[in-house]
Length: 165
Image (cartoon, rainbow, N blue to C red; front, side, top):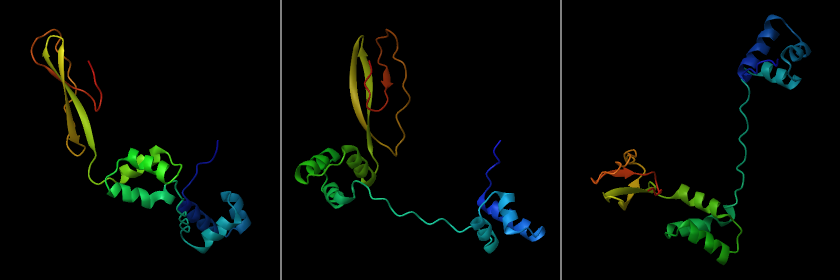
């Protein structure tokens, strides 16, 4: 069985406790707590571990053309248009998915979703209605089953962008 991994603050507290109460040497503290001499030294020098250094920002594939994409988004271009322009006019090799996600993250306001509603108007006859719904509004009511063989008007709401029979 492997020993439980403890929090670094707790480890530092235990090392300081053992050093003060039992007057153990650094080497004994290293062996008891199974750590390096640097960890023992850091625990004895300060009450808390030093915070980790923040990692530098990693460059992304969109960085070289970000200014171009931003200007096209402001001009109202769709992600497919932006991708095509970058490929044709600027000779860049960037995936459509990266462009789509970047544009989606910077799009102002809530996204729109389409919901398809089917209405049974007669036996064997359906009419379809597409509704645009704001994501901040409540979703449409859950789907209900079509009445089997009744000639009355019954409705069924389907999941976003799906068509059913």
